[in-house]
Length: 532
Image 1 (cartoon, rainbow, N blue to C red):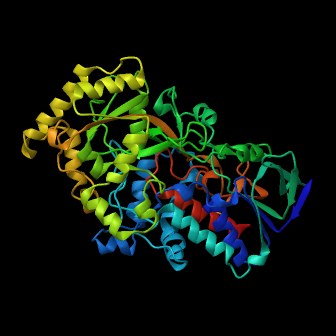
Image 2 (cartoon, rainbow, N blue to C red):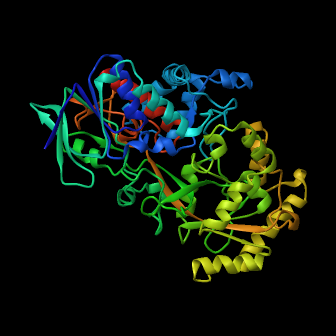
Image 3 (spheres, helix red, strand yellow):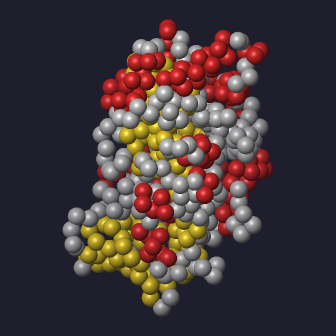
């Protein structure tokens, strides 16, 4: 039995745990930081992300004439979240985030060397439910990879670094309680039978959510989405399996809203998987047609990304077969297709300004070639009949109907041909609305026909729902103290980041405005560090 002793044990070396450890060192506390993964992956899932953080009322917004602030931001948040009457702590955390994020995240990050792209992007605008009224998604220059690198460097070069002990490949399985107070944890070394025990005055859980376990995702599937799809891809951290939720629950912790999940509708299989069912989350082109398993356009409200991700998942899951197709062409793909995260955005990740500008102006041919050659869910053909043959070869059951897909494409193209004065198609109206903001105009085609022979070849993408983030979790108060089922703090136990539903056991509600996930990890981590 390996034994460790410290003032505070932080479980999880993602950005929430790193932020907590930084604030603990600032206060002169001895910190033991444990993580199940290997050292090179310090930073967790955030290190793989695109690096967008939600802020309302920043200098970057004001530079573009965006009038925003905490009052409008909170109003949008409440509208999108769908909080119930009993969601006291999620509401309290939402208000705390909106009011504190600029000073405690935006200013703090810039102070330690994090830079942001100059223009905020406009995502989750809302569909049937109002979302972001204005652009608020602030992208870290260098993606989430750079965010994690800067945070890790700030921690490891801290003047009080001698107070920090890091241990990787340590899987925490249970918490230790002494006289009603949490005083440590126990677990095993990954890949061995060697056990360890850590003792401390306080414990901070920052170990992520449940969405790395597809079994638990299915068990907690949201009612809005019907039943879970037959094929579900994994876009979460492979170790985000809810083990620490169970450990805390065994001591009486209140775990809430595990059905509040942020999954995506446009996942494809990773051709170099690093975990079972490894998927990549596409940023679906707005100019592509979103079709069901037969090749019929999903409707009557056409599916368009960037407005309501929760609804996109619901619409796909309501189909007879809960997967979908995107129909587009090479011209649309070059301008609009993207994969979420830093892995397939090397120009952003490596901070190569000229390459970013080139891709924006001339199209991302590198990504197009990569996915069409390697991803098993992409098919390419010069003609629609040839494309449908390849789609049916991929499914193996002849389910895609040539007549249905021809009707969808020719009808859409005819509406474009009629001219903007007669665009009575909701997808075209939303494209026009999106292009009013320069950040979207740069990467959205201007009413591009699908069957335009000059824009070919044709492309079809088979897409599956992909698991991503847990928006529920351990219920916490505004000091990140974990609450029991009677609403009382469990002495010595704190939680931050995704393990706490990003704050309060679900501060986003059932929909997230995007960027509140990285932001919630950072704010919660800092608060947990101070409180512990």
